[in-house]
Amino acid sequence: MRLLAVEDDQMIGAVLKKALKADGYAIDWAKDGLEAWEALQSQNYDLVLLDLGLPGMDGLSLLQKLRAAKNALPVLVITARDSVQDRVLGLDAGADDYLIKPFSLDELEARIRSLLRRRGSGLSSVIASRDATLDTVSKTLTYSGKSGILSAKEYALISALMATAGSVISRAQLEEALYGWNEEIASNAIEVHIHQLRKKFGKNLIRNIRGLGYMVPA
Image (cartoon, rainbow, N blue to C red; front, side, top):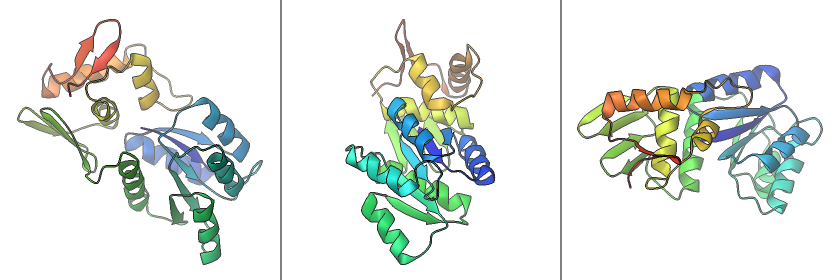
């Protein structure tokens, strides 16, 4: 899952990036509205975390522009503007949820999971595919009688594959799902994570489709 954080506060942006990266998300960080708009035109995201008080283009204008372009991407507004009127303006402009600063990282992560489930039209926190089940809250994978908690990158990789079970995902697509802007990616990073998952759960968990990529059977 790839997220875009739009936040001009250096400290808050750094905390968001660190926490969500540790939670298994690929996270890009835009520090103003114009940079965020450019990112949204060139990159596919699963969700946007949006501050309202931004330089260049304020968050409300960015949100209105996004919805005017018929883009239904989930948007979680994170702001210090806590009046009822501000919340109404944000929701009417197209926000899917609203979180007031200061906030708990646990609550933030729960709201992100909720919005992502809603986008996938699923009510469960568990993704199931053939003999595999993935708990998106505990980051626990169960496959063929084996169960274990995953590292952040293992979770990001298997969740991307299980979300599109039966379809082949290329190495480049997996790198996009696992890594944010300016993250250094080793040439064999994807293969290393797949090797680790196969070592823990068995070689049949992930199939290698020669010349195309990888898949989890549907």
